[in-house]
Image (spheres, rainbow, N blue to C red):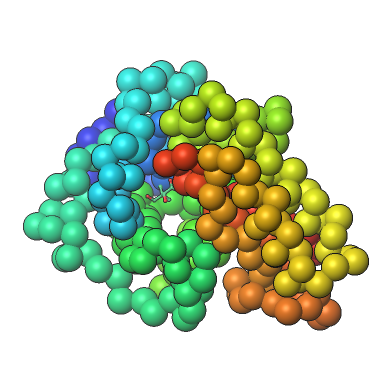
Length: 283
Ligand code: PAF
């Protein structure tokens, strides 16, 4: 596996690969890799010739300085894991490589059309501008045929799909299923920061999402959201939102009538660790 830190170098390397007719798949990450990430790598390996993974903790998507500081950084383990997984190139740039002259030079002028108004956007102001900014920059550098992202970040991949569409970027977004631990907790880099007790209790999130799937045919949306918030409110946990939306446009819904894809999305604080998850209730 090649490890490349410089944007110029990876652009040149990719030009050579493309001149040889190779197709490129790209998995952007912030490191602290787990099996969920490796499943994106293997999906890419099965669909394209060359798989590139980036590891870059993007400061512009953190609205909370403490969260940025505490974000786990495990570069050596990540590279070992990627090598074993069969990844071809890992791109590990510095902030200066991604944003030469400052991040403000790389602002993306794309109104998000309300897609960022609720849920993560509401609770993490500026987060999606940062995500759009870094993914656009990475796509400009890597120019992949395919981009692989996880369903766990439902709002994120919907916004990236919108960006690709609006900016007519010639990359196909492939959304991959959320990988879960045995008890149902969605895999996340943040899980390693949970205390043992919170880790044990965190499976409540998956249980409540499943419960919402059962309730969707018999209870009102408002009732499900309220009950779910109550169920998630266990000692040490603080649910931030449990919202049922139209999966196509991320708008909140009052009823399931005429909605093709119904998704429940939630964010919960377990101590000082913020966990998100979602489940498609109907499609
Ligand atoms: O999902 C993530 O890890 C990040 O938001 C991403 C897409 C790598 C952008 O920094």
